[in-house]
Length: 263
Length: 263
Image 1 (tube, chains in turn yellow, brown):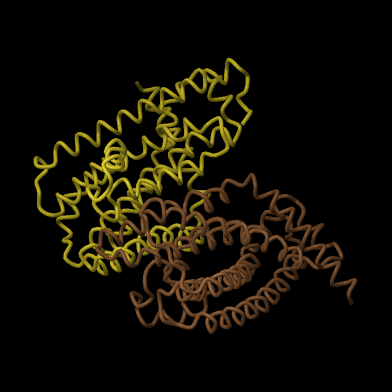
Image 2 (cartoon, each protein chain N blue to C red; image 1 turned 135 degrees about the vertical axis):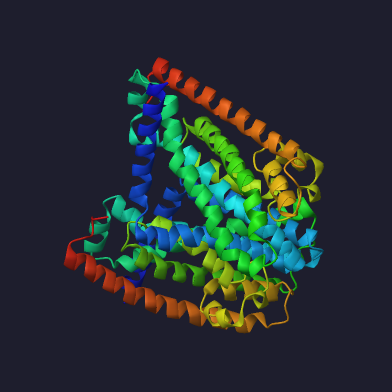
């Protein structure tokens, strides 16, 4: 167990080191923060034009969640794909150490950044688009935000594992992330979608979590939304297990066929 | 004089073709032209239909197409200089007797004309997914407005591309630069949604006038499309002058500092 902890810690350190290189004051202030805020503003303004302040408030909560989910999907996929791009996959395969805690640790900084995005979007946009949202209501929803980002992260890992032998990982992640805006009830309720798309939404992360968040913010108790939270957790666990199983398979195939560096 | 003009046209034609070949394997281009326009159309038209404003459908379709055009310009034209530098060919291009801006114009025009695909994709999505009535009131004005919009956006892309060469974080800035342009240009919502103090900024942007020109040609707003086209021509010339001045300064700076290959 102590070895797992050690590997996890070293993974966190590596993940943080990767992130720290990108997090210069210029990129944070000139790119990361504006991107998260302005993407949310854009979609909230569409909702405002379509349905007034009520729909704008709906979109504010949805886009707050989506800002973190979108980031997490891409970051988690990168955690897996980076091994390929940096040429470190052979070491991962050859090393006797278990790769799972290492990659789990490497995912943590991206996950935390996703959560920080939620905080950032809420802090800046609630005064403009959700004046009647109380701090207490948002704090009550905080644990569900945390669970939902974790669940979406599992989808990011799966996307990374699926796209590992290809060069189209980023495109796939972006497509999944944006598609979830439609299927997840970000700008308008899931019930407005055709049944088949609703079904897709329900087997993807975020949809149940977002429903639970909206209900808790509107005053529901945790008990009222427990089935939604449990569904979100189960979906996350299933995607996570599928991701790690597939990644493990990819490593085995790469070892057998000698195409580790080929992509 | 004629020989010189023919020579310049040959350079433009070659760089146009070269860029088309490079683009065919660029996943960002595939994403921004084929995937994102579909998603943005579904999202925006879906939001307007849910909000009870189905008559905004064509406006949203045009806006989504413009987003695709702009994305393609920003991600590809904005990155041309950066791509040449990363590929190690920037010094050769700048040292060659052919003016580098001429090569840039050929490459940017290539991207701009390919970006028309996104408009086709959004119209097809509106037609198939929502069965929208996509009647264009003044087809001739629509086509001319579209061409002028493409040229104007290309020129704007050249301005940004000249600046991006100064930073290795150009990709990050491009991501962040998308949404302010979408918002200020009112690509998917009426500009009246924005605060009045922001509107002067909107009037400086090619996508704003391109969107207005296309919307008025489609009969969605009561403006004269030909007058807006004249404004687009003026704006394109202004962008070209700015891009030229900026590029001269950037070129001087990288030559002076010896930083052409440094990023």
